[in-house]
Length: 126
Ligand SMILES: [Cu+2]
Image (cartoon, protein in one colour):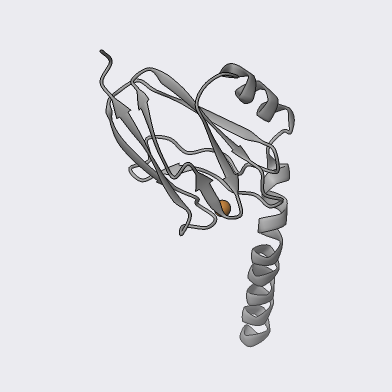
C-alpha cells in the first residue's frame, strides 16, 4: 500500500517535471512582452541567440535601460547573480528591460540554462 502511494507520488513528480518546461512561458500573459519592450525602444540591446547573450559584456552609463530580447525558439530568462533583478521566462521574441541606476558590474545568467552568462558594466554618470 505504502509502496503504491510512493510510486504514484514519484510518477506525479516526474510528470510535473516533464511538463513544467513547456508550461512555463504560457504562465505569463503574452501581452506583457510588448509593454516592457516599448518602455525603452532605443536602449542598448542584448540579444539571446543560440544559447548565448550577445554582447556577453556590455558597458553603459548609469541610468541606462538595457533591453534583452530572446531570438531562440525556446525560453530563456535573465537572473542577476545577487538577485538584483530577474526576468520571467522569455518566449521567442519576448523582451525584458532593466534600468541600471547605480554604477557597478552586474553579472547575470539564464536561470534555465545556467551556463549562459553575461554581464553589464555600469559606469558612474559623468
Ligand atoms: Cu536559457
